[in-house]
Length: 102
Image 1 (tube, helix red, strand yellow):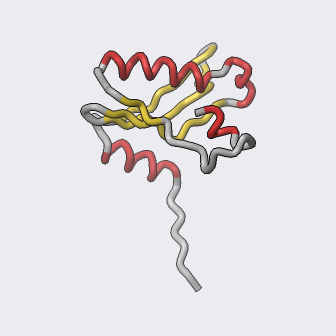
Image 2: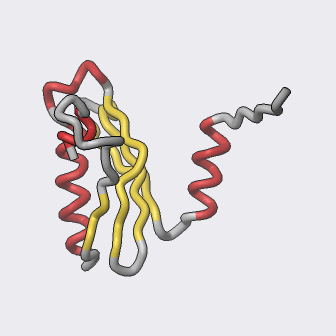
Image 3: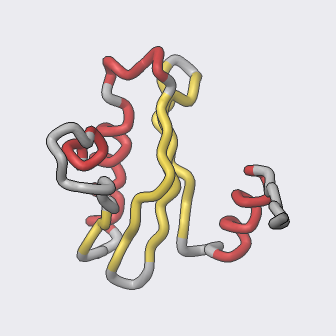
């Protein structure tokens, strides 16, 4: 039998904070004093990367993740970043909502 290791999200996020200090941030969209969308962003001298996002389903009609990406593009543009990498869907299928979004 194999061994499995389960790490809590607190461990993962604390590791991100330590390892990428000064080169990352957790962005939020706040509506009526509530976080409705968040994402982790990493960056280097010229490039930025969008990673692990989530939105409150009750507010999806507001498109909070799109607003978060738009505001982050403005932020990175002011930091003179050349590229914001959004990652990609697992394939280019028309049914792949992640690929279509990006």
